[in-house]
Image (cartoon, rainbow, N blue to C red; front, side):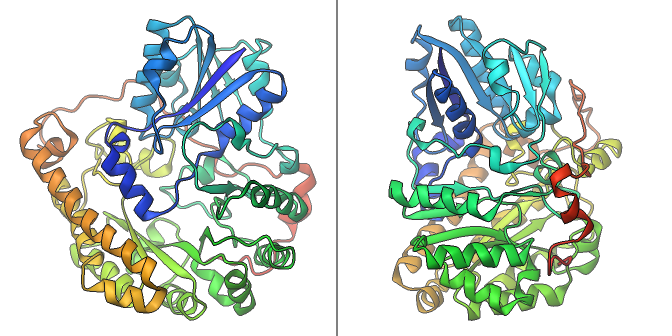
Length: 493
């Protein structure tokens, strides 16, 4: 059987300028799910190809003309769901191939996904996928089975990837010990589980042997268990498994452990995204962030002292935040020489408590999933109009990535990072310009909808039911001890 996996990307993200911008921001990588499931199929004797549309062409027209393809598999997040549905519909119209859809969005809205697919897999698919592919499981909607022993999950198979990839991804844990109200991945992947350190190191070793120069830890919070994170770093250092640069997600509480910070630096884990979210304590408390203002300040200072470049993530549009609060967060990120800024417009993803709250209150203004990318406003803010919040997103980018900051970045991190900052400064001006043009010229665009939004106008109802993610899954049997005895230093941020 010939199987093609496609991770879709919206039309904007398939444009060459956007792909170039992605390379300026960081190294291209690939979603691991299709590489894991594709590897399972390959070892079962099937012919497999994997395409990541964000990083390169899927050559869809060519694929749709290939009569040897038996199955298309699409992995969907909310923002790429419309493109995924378009591909699925084309496959049905132009080929005799089957279509299977999975991913976070399909887990939240399986009936919607099923209207475009022969079968939908919800949740974690490793234990059911091959049975679905080979016809042993025929239910239209198949519930995945969580993997209790993550060491049993195969490594991603990069040999089947047909689009560019510069950084290998490692997921050493699943789930998160925190449950922010706007987060979907921590709920879909509950409960929190860990792979053995030996298993993680062997995967890293395989990427070193493949010649990868960059690595990403894609855990929701790599430093949730600090003793475990330190041991992984020690092994990477001792066994010469460090890379030119390794990215990870962390929380502000990592600064409470100076030994951890030094080991992160020595293992070249020198690029971290930390969710600052807001400098307004009431706003932080409203989303169950579990951190305070002093934590945020300490984290910025400690990471800088250890040569760890911070990508500061802030959320724009929390009900408790005014325009001044949002701008204060951007100023703070600049003041601590944050390496990059990731301003994220608050987004009510289907399946989260935030979606339920805003849906019940009638605050969601559109169900055009392509705009659910944390860069477009999809709800009625409490303290401003939707377009005013959209403008704050553009202001955050322009203000942070100003040309005057390039000198400070060069002094702090070196010439190549100053060049990257220059590129980001250019993009921070081109993007808003394009959005403003679209809002005035393209009358049916999302930007025009946001700019001309009328709160009294009737809105299109949601066509399909939304399923809430499991937010507090039961512990797997072999991890009972971990749940009775929390990992050392695993405090709330």
